Length: 305
Ligand SMILES: *Cc1c(COP(=O)(O)O)cnc(C)c1O
Image (tube, rainbow, N blue to C red; front, side, top):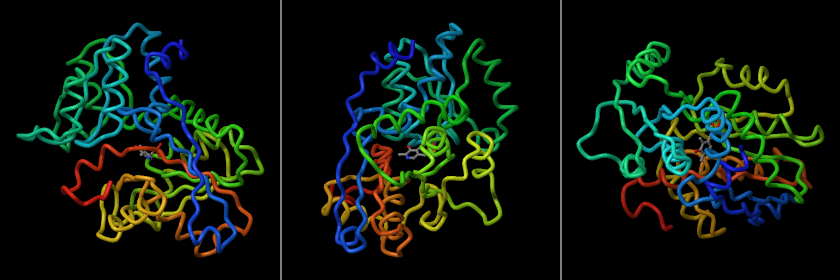
């Protein structure tokens, strides 16, 4: 069934693009970028991979309504709305916060794809268990997908991202980290002589090991590191320096990034290369996980792309 589902969603092939910068040459690093931002105009990036097995499970169970969660600019909500529309499923998006007078561009697009939007207060939103109970009463017979497509099915689907690198050698795979689901998926299929480097998009308090515990439980792998030094203030936070980086990176490489995840990833990896954190001769495969639609929340004319 998963092949049929993928056919309906109709993805374009991902491309691998060489990223040559003065620092990569200087430090003798080869860097490639896996452009999964290019696989689809609406479902840009990793969210489709994380969703596919949950949607398959829902369809095998004969469920007709998918409930999932996100904020006003959520890549996951938009990917879910699009996929459900293609697969003939009804979708309900649970949005954190009051309904605003004017919906964000992302939520307007979700709504246009037929997603029913249901706003809940921030307090209720974070009371996951009680909220799930209430939602199942409001929308009986629904299938709930965790926020961001996290969970075991998300890990399994994310593992398939690695297949897109077939034919390309690399020593390190690098990706952005939100929940760590994508990184966990990659680690389940990475070969032992390769390692993974994650760059967290979130500011995680020192001593909080939720993500490493999750990775330990789902993969048992120790073949990775996560750096928490490039969050630029925290999730969906930004600075003028980050925006400036996005513009100059685009001018130099032709690669557009999103300010929530991939800009922090590229900034971090380039900085780490400069600080000799990859041995000379390393070959990096950096995953561009998409999310460009979220740049709609930036003030107009912030970006040159
Ligand atoms: C959601 C998202 C991530 C983070 O993925 P996790 O599996 O939650 O770690 C990274 N990049 C983009 C563009 C995303 O939308």
